[in-house]
Image (cartoon, rainbow, N blue to C red; front, side, top):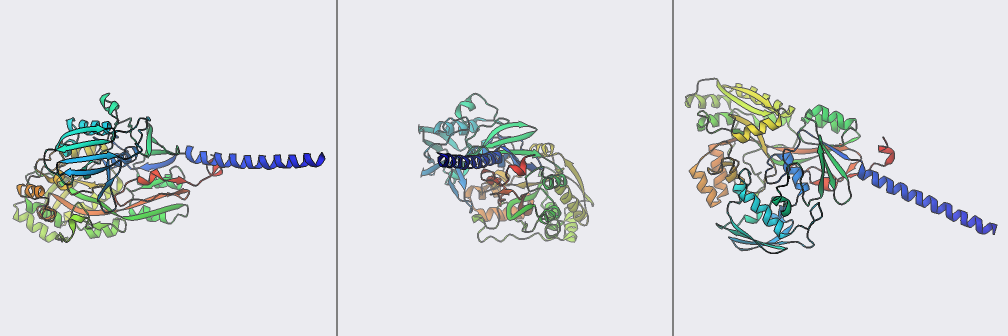
Length: 496
């Protein structure tokens, strides 16, 4: 009996040890998910309704909250996301939702009725910047829960690549739900709350992601080093990125970028309307010097919105506007401009953007230009740009995949709110090229006429705590890996 008792007690002890180990493992796993992963941003998203969002932070968050019918592969070709498609004719497209159907975050299935309701709502909205993109849709028919048919007014062989808006639930569209502040999507991250910090929860495991706005880049770096945030991406001076690379507790990853930075011009301005003045500005900027001194490695000088590797640029050689302040002065004098030419440049208060503006100011001074810098908080600055209240501004096109961006940005029928032609550039010759989809001719015409001043494609980086894994920056700057990011820390690391 004594032997049996001893055996029983031994078995009980082993079971308790296993149970405790399992409980510790479960607790550690639970803690990893309940302890938020904190992402510090230079500016918060402005709008979480994909029908309205146009700023980079909003579009990056919306990619995670919502799902679209179509996405793009690494070569910018459209690929199925929620649905496969069949082009019955250039005016008729059938989209079949994949099985099993995706579920919205409030647990209702995403059906063809939601697809129709989403695009119907965009077409009828009067204040959405996306409305003109879908003005070619004649009708949307639902055949059953999984099949939706788009009929077009005019043939469009590229129509599938335009269906990249996140799908919203039909019932909530009809109730006029506030998606801007309380989004409901079907993506990998679901909305939790937005009280100072934006909180999203990963659907598959409950991992919480917190987005906080920390405008000052030095403060963002200090917060990462002090363990007050876990992740930074973009919007840091190269010196701060290099500094982080020296820290053993921080991982820094970089990748060549495709996002296009440029100077926007107001073509209603009597001076900027003159091509020689625009050429003078282009020749007044030493892009390569700026890239070498104050940009991340792998940043590339740009000639067009879409990068050289994009299929529309095959065999295209765009002439470079070399830095030549003497030529700039000559062009200004030929245009009848009294020197110095006074210009007002608007930008955000982000430290790197102000720094770049200051460098531009110094370079352009040598070319007979007096550049006044006005730095505004991000929301105010972006509103000024959208309203056309500027002479010059600096911005970056983010996540652009398709060549129809040229029509949106420069088509004479694409002035806001119909499109993104914020500079009000009108060129009948370019319109004809856009209609013919002659992309080499389009890019050459834009390069020659300079409705904007091309700058560069910024390299991308992410810096994060060593306990963070499964995350890397994307060439377009998207935050897609928040769907897979992990924390390797245990209870002892985060017991505080």
